[in-house]
Image (tube, rainbow, N blue to C red; front, side, top):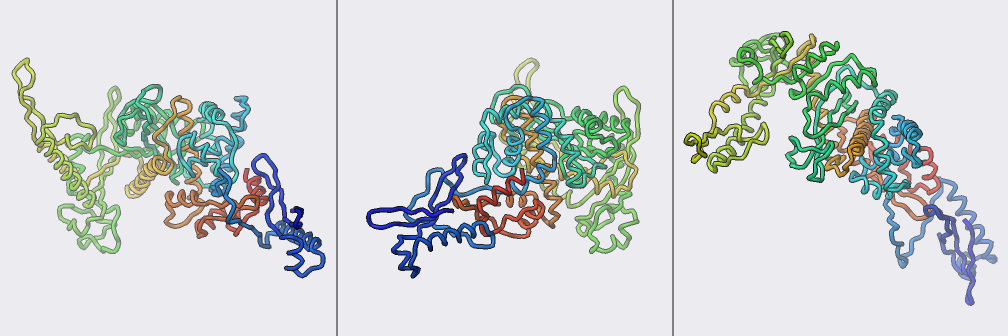
Length: 587
C-alpha cells in the first residue's frame, strides 16, 4: 500500500492506494480516504498530519501481511458496482482438486496432449468440465460460461474445449484403467464382487445417426438414445463403462467389458452380479468357462413348469432376514428350522424374507445341459406391494377395454398386458368388430408369483451371504439416478460420436470422485445428494482488491471436507494474495 496526496485549490486530501490485479491487468485503487491534512491534524491532534498518514499506511500494510490482524474495507453507498463485477465466487472445486490430482488425471492429460500435439491445456479443460459437472451441470458451452464464477476462472476458448473432447475419446479405455490404478492409493477398491448394469440417456434431437438411435428408453422418451454399460465395485465406486448405440442389445456388451477388465485392469478373479436381461445363459456359461462366478436374477416365468412349481411350493423355506425383536417364528428357531409358508402368520412375518434352494437344468442351443443353483426368496410385504401395483394397472386396463383402444404395448408394466383382443372378421376381409376383455389367465399366472424372486448362481457359498451380496446391486441403480438427476447427464446435446463418448467419460470421472470422497468422509447417513449440495454451496463473496469472505455454513461436513482437502477456508476473510497461494498449491 502507498500514500496518495491529491491537491486542489482548497486543500490537500490523503488516500491509501493499493495495486490490484484484475484479470491480466494491474491497476491502482484507493482503498481508504484518510481526509484532508487539516481534517487529520484536527481529528488526530497531531502537528505533522503528513507523518501520521505515512504511519497509517505502514500500519495497514503490516496488517494486510499479518493474518492475525483485521482487514479494513470501506464501501461507498453512493458508488455503483461496475457492470459484470458480480461478487459471488464458487469454491467447491478447491475441495475436489486433491482427488482429481490423486487420480493421476493431470499426468494422463499431459500424455494424451503430447501424443496429440495439441497446443491448448487439456488438463485445465478436463478439470473444468469434471468440476463443472458436479458444481454447475449443463451443456459444455454453459459449463465454460459458468466456470467464470469460480474463484480462479480458467481460460480456454470454446473451440479448444470441443477439440479436447475429440482428443480424449481416443484414450477413454486408457483413462479408465489408469484412474482405477491411481484410485487404489486414495480408497480401498473391493473388486472381489463387481456389479454390471445398463441404462440409457436421451438426446435433445429427433435425428438418428451413429450412436444416437431410437430404442426402448427407460424414461419413456421418444427421442434417440445412447446406452451405457457400467461396472461398479463392492464399495459403490464406478469401475469401468462402455457406450453403445441406442438400438443395440445389452447382452453382448458384458463379455468385451470383462475382457477389458482382464487386459487393462488386471482383474480376472471376481464374482459378477447382473440383472435378468444381462444374465443370459450364454453370459453365464462364458463366466464359468473363464473361471469366474456369477449371481444373476432368474426369471421365474422362464423356468419350466416343474421347476417353477417347485420354486414357489410352500414347503422347505428358511429365514434369510428377520427383525430379531419378533422372537421365534411360530415357536421355532428362525436361524435353523425349515418352515411351511402356509402354516405361518404372514401378517406377523410381513417383513421377514424367506428363502429356499433348488437345482434346475439349463440348456443352450448347440451345447449340453448343465445344472444351476437357484435361490428363491419370498417376502409378504413384497407380495402386498405387487398386488397393489397390479390393482392400479387393472383399473387402467379396464378403461382400455371400455374405450377399445388398440395402441400397442409399450413396456412390460403396460396395463395392455392384461387385455385380450379378438378381431371378428370374415375370411379375407378387414375386421368389422373388435372384442376386448381382461385376460384372466395372465392375471392368475402373475398372482401365483406375488412376493417371489429368484437368483441363479454358480457360487457354493451360504445362501444368506449370497443374498446379502446381491442386495448391494441397488447401488448401481443409484449411480445411474445420480448421473441423470444431480449431474444432469441427459439430455445430451453433442452430435459427434467421439464427443458423446467423452461426455460420459466426464460424467464417469465426476461420479468416481464423488464416491471416493463420500467414502473418505465416512460420515453416518451422508447421502451423495447432500454431499453434492454442500459442494455447490461452498461459495465466497469477493471483495474487490481485498479478498474473499465465506458464504457457506460451517458444519461438521464442511470441516471434514476441508480436512480431507488439507485446506482451511472458513476464516472470516482470506486475502487475495493468500487465495492465490492456495490455488497454486492445488493445481
